[in-house]
Image (cartoon, rainbow, N blue to C red; front, side, top):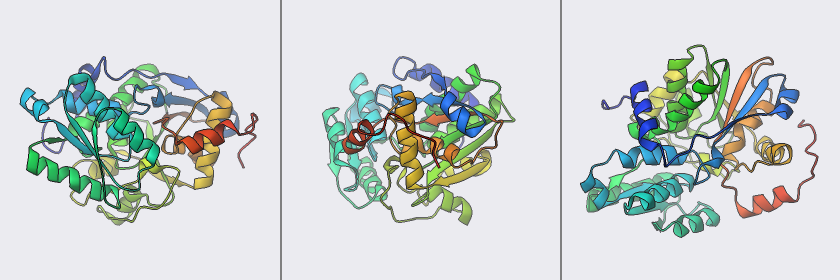
Length: 330
C-alpha cells in the first residue's frame, strides 16, 4: 500500500485477508422504510458481525497485515467501544496481545465488554483524543503497533469490503447512507462503490451535536470540537488535526453529509426493533434517522449501512418495553 493512499486493489486484498474472521453480512429489504420514504430501501446489517459491529473488518485487515515480530510485541488502540472490542477479538483469535485505551466518557457497559474480551483496558482522559494520546505513548515507549480506529490504510481497506459486498449484490444502488464519524467506514465504502458503480451517491450521516468530520469539511481542514452527550456515542471523537487519509477521502468521495437529531436517532432505534426485530445502537441507526427526515429523494434505490448493534443495557431495556406498533415517524 502506498503511503497516504488506498486503492480498490487494497480493498480486494483485504477481503481475501479477513475471510474467516469477518463475515459477509446480509442485505435485508425493508418494506416498512420503503413505504414511508417512497424509496426502495435495504439494510446492510453489520450488527451480525462476531463483535456486533463493522469494526472487525478493519481490525482484522490491519492485524493480519503485520509481521510476526510486530504481532509478538502486541497492538494498542483507542476506542469508544466497538473498535476496541474488534481489536480484542482479532487479537485473541491470532494470539496477539491487545491494550485498549478509552476515555472516562465511554459507557460502563462497553468497558465491561472490553474487559470480558480478554484485553487490557486503560481508562483515562476526558475525550477520545486523550485516549488516543495514551495509545500513541505506548507505541513510543513499548514498541506496540497502533491499530488506528479509522485513519489507517489497512483499516480503511477492511471497512471497504462492505462496499464490495454491496456492489456484488446490488448493481442498481443509487444511494448509500453510511454513519460518519472519523471517516474510516465511509471512506472505504465510498471508494469501493464508486469504483464498481460510478453513479452511486454516498451520503454520510452524523448526529447533530459534535459531528467533527462535518464541521471539518465545512471549515476546509480538520478541526477540534468538544464531545457532547449523544445516543450515537460510537460516532464521537475527533478526526485528528494531522489526519492522513480520511478527511481527504471523505471530501473527495462523499457526495453529501447530513445531520440528524437525537429524537430522530431514538425513533430509528425503536423503528428497527419494532419493524424488523433488529437491535441497533444509536450510531448504527443514524441512516434510518436520515430516511425519517426525508433526506433521500423518493424513488431512490437506497441501502442503509446499519453499522452496529452494541446497545447500552438501559437502551435495550427501553426498546423491549416499547410499543409493538412503532407508528409512523413524524
